[in-house]
Length: 122
Length: 107
Image (cartoon, rainbow over all chains, first blue to last red; front, side, top):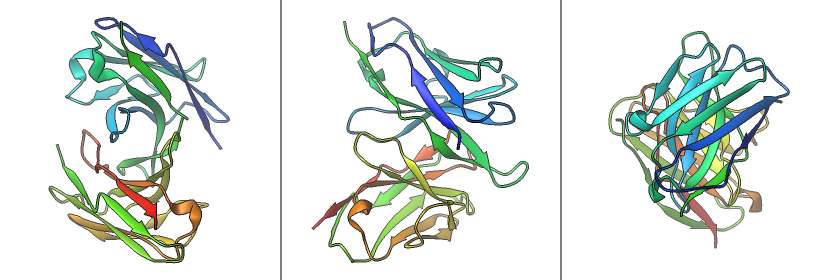
């Protein structure tokens, strides 16, 4: 059973960069797509984007101009950066693995990290 | 973006009841729909994918149906552990989008 764990600062100042890392254990990061999803307090879920183990990415257009993802296969980790944050970026941030039924089929989220709350405040 | 709309937003039921949650997509998504359960302070948990396929380890009292733009999640014989918030999600189209959630409360 793969395990995902988010890590990073819980408090970020407005206009600065939010940086999080997701560490994958009990499984390989290879051959999978990995996503970041966030949830503002008391609200619903928003997909931020994914990164493939090869490094290819796809971001939600709503955040695309401020988001960057990277992967380090040697450490079994992938990371998220969100630039120029505001209070609207305050949320629980989840990392998740994308799973598919067969080659080239659309993917859903089968494993999630526990989530980490990031608060944007001065 | 494909909009996902769930109804109702809140649902109250007794232990032992059967309940149904509806999810509508703003355009056809085939059968590429997932359902998740989320408890307070916890990450979402996958229940069903491809509209009706039960994830391994999920009790058989959970079932899903539908295709195109209308989908349902049915929970039969509600157990105390089932009281949570449920989300649908479409996944054939980027950006992936979720319904706003349905909170299932104990009556």
